[in-house]
Amino acid sequence: MTEVQLPAEPSGLAFDPSRSALIVIDMQRDFLEPGGFGETLGNDVSLLQAAVGPCRKAIAAARAAGMLVIHTREGHRPDLSDAPPAKIARGEPSKRIGDPGPMGRILIRGEPGHDIVEALYPAEGEPVIDKPGKGAFHQTDLMQMLGNARVDTLFVAGVTTEVCVHTTIREGNDRGFRCVALGDACASYFPEFHRVGLEMIKAQGGIFGWVSDADNFASTLAEAAKAA
Ligand code: TIU
Image 1 (tube, rainbow, N blue to C red):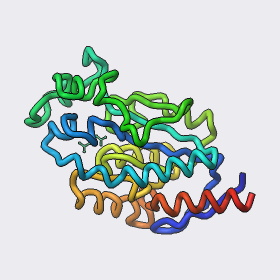
Image 2 (cartoon, rainbow, N blue to C red; image 1 turned 90 degrees about the vertical axis):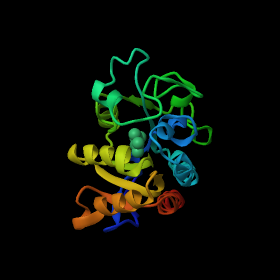
Image 3 (spheres, protein in one colour; image 1 turned 180 degrees about the vertical axis):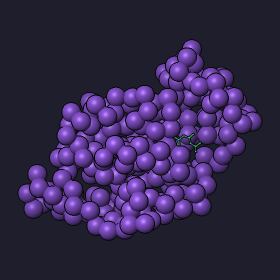
């Protein structure tokens, strides 16, 4: 497929949908629902609901365009052998990583809380990357997967804007990918961090990426399909 033009900030971006991927970061019950990791840290998890509708729209548009859709989940092995002690010990959470909670053990693979929310559940065959850190490239096979698919542009959605979305965009940018945050498809427990997090990406002429939104992403892909 040929390149299409996405309205974005600080400037529009020409991209080839067949060389692009949508990465949906950590839309897990542990972050979005009461009783999970996010709430144990003292957060109002309802704030993250704002990203669900735009994520749905972006995922549907990517699937319709045949674009690679990749989901990630933050979490650890049940024996905690991949969880840095500094991460487990940090702060004063009401429960620590690995402790039992209403959705199973906090931030542990295989537990109900670790799974992706029902509204955004991966389709059959879509890769799900389990990551132990904040960035999706750290200790995962994401780089191999993107290289095999000849991807050069990443559209990033999910939570939270200033933590796992930012880290992944920074990692991707340093690895040579053009990274676009779909702003309304991201969310934070801190609305101000969400706003400023997006500002940081696109400042200085797009210092480590671009910012667009789910509507522009979907309409650009739909127009490309009509023109094809
Ligand atoms: N706490 C918080 O804002 N985020 C995380 O711990 N992980 C992700 O962003 N996924």
